Image (cartoon, rainbow, N blue to C red):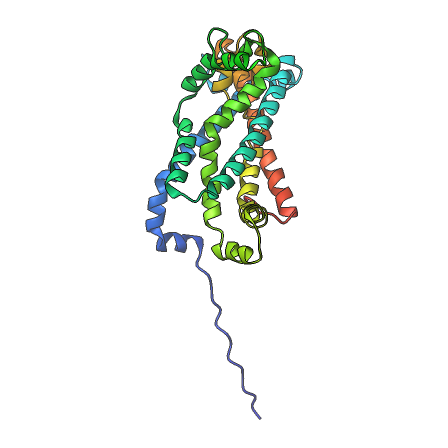
Length: 316
């Protein structure tokens, strides 16, 4: 007796990479300018990192440069000025990140509780307008507000009796990091709030209705619904902020610094400027910038890995 052969299932082969390119050529052409922009301005300049391993001289060609290996990296970690600038960068970055997260999340929660839409939009618009001011204008305002001669801060504090005579705020090192943090919050809190408000809008309104039926007040709704609803957004932004831990800023510190507070005001970016352009030591400046970028990228992967292990949202 002949046995019936079962019909073989057809093998479904997925499209290859090049077949997908052909079928989606419109999207490829649309994204091509962006890809070229990223390659041209983000990857091609990485060739300049070779200067960190050379005793670079601008007049020489690439093949005639003197190669020094890790000499400049070794010099960096033996230089007390660079180690001081790392300390300043990390400290100011942590202050800015902490204050930025706390104020932005709190402000977003408070704005979300406003019932009058017109007033809510007015407050939000006023809060993020400072973001569009350049740091030159902002530091000029800060200098005028903190000046000894007629500065608004000194006048208010003397009127209230907190101080007896004007203080040279920008000449006292222990106040500088606080001034930087407060200035950053004033300039960026409104802008940082926008993304949290967008995340709050995406929360299911029925959750608030159910909570109200259960007798929850506003504070309970914020704690048990709003904050958990924007938790993924907070985690993603925190991971991205960790990747900028050595980017404490440049413009504000450079414009507010002076000889009295230089030891607490200089950052890695200022170090790169000083040694790269003023001292014409491009190799050392490149090594410093390369170190900063490698550490930042490494911290992003570490934070992303920790978030993955904790079961939270992650970038990759």
